[in-house]
Length: 310
Image (cartoon, rainbow, N blue to C red; front, side, top):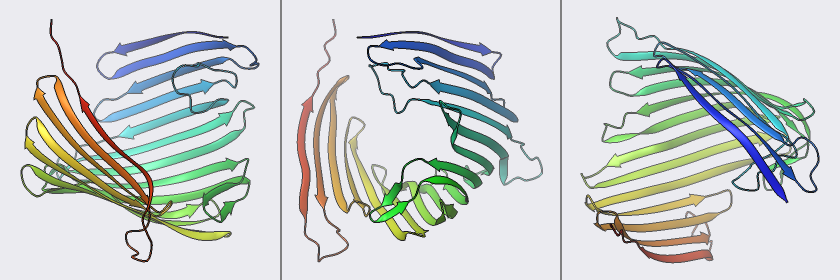
């Protein structure tokens, strides 16, 4: 049997201060140990300054049965501060932001399992573009070997490693928008180099747009090296405000899969919709003609909803 109970609360002070939290316990037959879970969070978010702090604990024997619980037996602590001045003498810059934060996880025995200290400098331009520089000081404790790629194993132990990233985000008002980022630094006992294109959008016509996405990472470790690549593009076409079609194509080198998803939506009357969805996933590399296509899964779905008003 399983029983659970709890209480939560939320408080707002003025316009910029909030306090939230909960406390819960469960009792499950056959489970012994720490049955409780709680969270407390503080936010202060005016325009020029900001601060946040939170703590979350989930006991080893906490078992809510309903919902989704990623892990147990941990305590997460987080704190951050922000300073965001608006320069008066730089017309091209709307706001600068200096952020600092620290986050760490402890297990039930009080042992630190991971810790990340982050410093971030962000420039928001008057045209809504943003430039961000971020640095991270990381620590991870591996209690079991970790395999980030086939044939590459990271042994157990504590790892200190640092990385920096630079990203530029083009505003949504542009015909071509998106975020371009570069990452350099350490990865456990090795190094990592990465390039990403995310949240991309190219407006070809008023009703036609393409959203490209690219992720490239190269990792060098004492036990081996590997490269991961992911390419994708989503196309949207609007026939009318209530009818549109979209198609997503994506290739991932980590598991050598090529997937597609085609979707049609029509709201034939307010609150009532008609959907047609096609999904397909293949084991292959479309960039290498020597590899054949092997079907992993395929689905064709038709769905219709109707809203009745009384």
